[in-house]
Image (cartoon, rainbow, N blue to C red):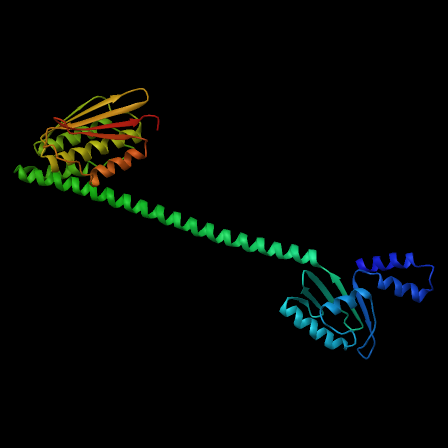
Length: 319
């Protein structure tokens, strides 16, 4: 269509010449290439544009049309692409040309499609980049899911390990205190020490823990009110249970004092015991778990070993 419009424009510009000369002049003035072929496969007319393009491709216009077509197909395969059975795109230097042969091989047309090919190539590159980015994104999402699953698994394992260690420590102290006649009651009490955020009776948990520790000869004294927020309350229960067990296991403590102070913006929990004071603080599973739990709430932990072993906890109460 573009070549046809250009042809009509050129004919209008050369109307002063006789008809055949006007048509030839119009064809020679086209930017697109065109050639006509006789029944013997020989080119009878080729305009200036196509002649120049053939010259750049080292193709002779005196060659039969079938040979020209084969040469263009080969060049399209080497540097270009095949569009259809009779249409090929050939890249030469910084130009792209689309060659089309009529079904009867009576006509050859050539159009400069450099801009279109550049846009197509850019579009394909963008598509490949997008697909690559999508693959990387999905891979990263899979990694994140895997990390989350591993973290959840570690958290569950850590919880099971800590809970088991605490129960075994209490059972061990119970046996050492030779109170085996109350073993059934102790087992029942231990099973009731699981901590959840939806614990309804706040005071009941500390009462159960106090009773269990008393059965192994350890006194637990709690002063102050436990916050009513479910998550903070559950965290404080975990801290008291963990530090009490550690005090018994490692410090041989017989008395544990807990002081809870509710301020406007935070909650302070001070836990001290009369057990042995270690020469150095070693962060095992217990202390590491406390720090990890506090980190979720923006809390802090400080350990003091002067005169008496004390753990000071600070929790923000706006969680």
